[in-house]
Amino acid sequence: MTELRMLLSHNFDLSEEIFPQLSRSEFTQVFIDGLRSYNKISCRQLNHPHWLVEIVFSSDDFDSSRVGSLCAQALLDKRQSQTKNAQDIPDILLLGGLKTTPPLSNDPQALQTGEWGVDVVETQSAERFLKVMEWEEKTANKTSDEIFKIEIKKA
Image 1 (cartoon, helix red, strand yellow):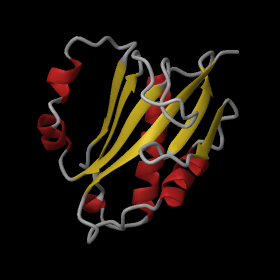
Image 2 (spheres, helix red, strand yellow; image 1 turned 45 degrees about the vertical axis):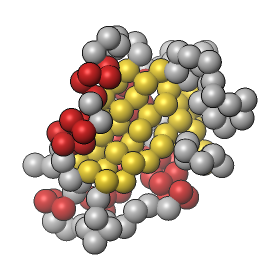
Image 3 (cartoon, one colour; image 1 turned 180 degrees about the horizontal axis):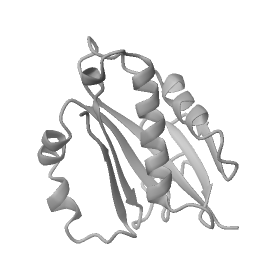
Image 4 (spheres, helix red, strand yellow; image 1 turned 120 degrees about the vertical axis):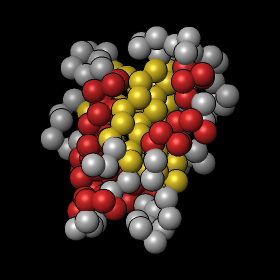
């Protein structure tokens, strides 16, 4: 069995009047709870300034995009449990990229070559967020083996 490692960061692009920003431990718990039923996936909190959660999964059973989709659903479920108004649910993006360059740090909790770094984004407008960060331009020369984008938009 081949294990892959995915690290999650959190980009909270919302007013805290709508939803409170999740603490590091609350954010981690979203994925621990949301992925608990998958016995080939494990989650834990990291002690790193940028990367908050480590997810380790079997590449024989899941590809990175599928794990990203499961994470997006877990966050959506959490936010739905916090409101009765579906219009308040933020757009959720999971923007994943495979690290192909040498690591910036030898810290074992930092992203290493061959691992997935995923920015988990909560925003009022996925389109605006992607445009501002120039997602299309930055990913134009990347293949589906190097990046993924999961979008959940409010109705």
